Length: 632
Image (cartoon, rainbow, N blue to C red; front, side):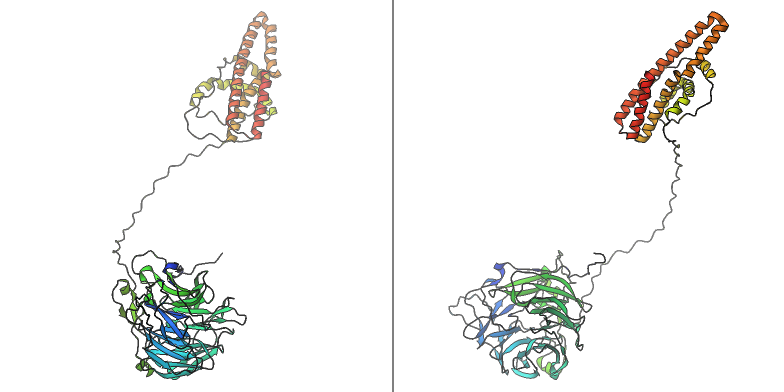
């Protein structure tokens, strides 16, 4: 997923919200005619639906606020003698609708005042057309009102003609001769250009008032129907069609260019025709497939269609219509609303909404929309005038007021927030950092391998003398100890003669009994096991060496030789000195035994408190063996 990023767009989270069945338009009889048409058209007030009826063609007009199950008998718009193939609403009058039929005629209808499907009349009265436009010789498959000029209607027929009607006079002032049957058509925003797709797989852009194509190039290569829609004021149009392998395609075109921008984009391999719908306010393209329940929507940006999301439904549609932008619910953050036919029996509204929780008007997703005022009249348009209709500010609709007209090129001002003036900058005061007291450097701890038995035996006499010299001061040092574990370095052996060691031991005062170190109130953390084991080994080795030195042959030979010499020289006075020396030695032995027992108990306690490694346990075991040997 390295390098992946999400494109910023305020429509990225748009989702389609279906409607519950009880709030749909139910009990309908949608036409089952096989002609490729959308079957349903919508404006903010009414829906027109191609109706399946006997005795001639008809279509139904349903007020959008009359949801639910409609009556079995409703007033229909009757007048055609064959099936109605297409309808279209006047963009500037929500009560004017045109219809195209298989009977080669185009009718214009006006919805009666206070029209409703629920009536108490015993006999249902159908609606009759207000104008009949005759001039085609074959069936009329499509009708489409001009988006800028008033009362200008285009109709495409199987007689290979597209006629431009002024519905107020009923005259077809212009005609566009086609080489093949037209499959779809779409106006540009100014109503001066018309783009068509035909059965001959050609795309043509017509200058309507010149009655000639200004661009003619190849479209989708597939055999199935192709659709086209103009992308508002972007001077682009989009087409949907099929490849030679019957794969559904989407293409973006610029008038005058014979190749699509970026080539043909393959979508899927479903066989249903794709119906394109363009929303000028959000720059979004909606694609709905016939025979499937999915609606894809894309955002147009930088000459590309960026996929946003897809509305998925298990109910397939045969027909679909989108309401004009001025008819959306701005209080619910709805940007588009579609009406799709389901099972030819009911129509389901689908609301496409931007998920926001704000309770104010969202001007960034609601730019001005095309209103009800045409740019030019039919007479002016036929004479060559061109214009873009004025727009309405949707914020006035949000506030519940009458729509406010704004120019067609109007852009809402960006909302700016006034902030309090910034305080004057204060020069920073440099604070003198506190002086750091020098931290005491810890004394180096000498560590090394424990002394071997041979090293201890070599320093037996030295350890005995050192112990006797320091024993008098041990009682004073015990009170000042901060811990019962201290690092004791290995004593260096000194070259002392055996003969000199014995008189020194004899002249020393008796050694005071050993006092075990008392626990202090220091709350510091215990030493690590390695240091503790080293301290134990050092303490244990000192009395062991002293005990060994007491009973070594070399140390024992000194008093014996001196006593013999004394007896030979002084006669009977030497026996008293020998007895004193032996008494002192016995006292020393008892003191050493007490210290050995104390150290042994301390070792046992520390073994239980510390989890020693195998090497440390082996060392302690070695000390225990030496202690046992000393006791014996």
